[in-house]
Image (cartoon, rainbow, N blue to C red; front, side, top):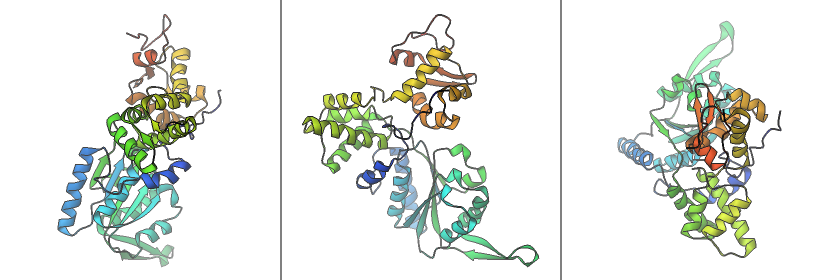
Length: 347
């Protein structure tokens, strides 16, 4: 078994890193007008917000789902701000007992929003307490146990629950049905990412031209978080080299030194593809075999490695297993051997 791959510190990783938490605060947009991309989603949200305001109601409960790093937390904060709501930020794994969830729900604050990140990881017992709170603005308290148990209903102030998840399929149908607004965030096209990079560079005081922004954008895997991270690293190379502006040439040189290729693949991604090509003839191969060969958890491959490879057209999930595509053979400049299975042609 090979060494486990260190996916936490990858430059293009969509998962939040310590540096991101420090840097993203200044880059975070504060309104739907400032939020770049996801245009259709934003237009729908504007309608829902306007309608709720006209009725004098809180916004209906919102579920945001999609790959990490696309702005779900930012969008939750924007929704609260647009509605004039205070917002409390938490996550599914943060709750260890029903009492903690009940305390959060019963806080006496008028017109508020509660954001639960990774809501799919909320304990099922705790989830049961959310149902009456979301539907009827009440929670049921049970005092004592056994025959002495007493039941009380505590009325809540109306609130908006905003849930976020990268794995919508793991949310129970009972919980999902209680969200009136369900929004899917998708990967960003390079054009939108270039606008985000240009805006971030301006805020950070970094000189960048159009070609430099586009070079970083097309290697950012469709993810604003990765785009901002790559911008900061390219800035370091430009600063040390004495370049006052990040041009296309400067960006290309810096990203190449960082091991991020023209499609945004890092060593980890190329290793994954080469494994399928060189050890399994291009596929198909089962995910369990790949996990064992790479010394990684299956969930890591499915959540961290594969989504962008599939979106970039380099990998296919089939009923028989994973297969690389002709584009993957061409990108890695490899030729299939005679007898290779599956996607064995580069034509």
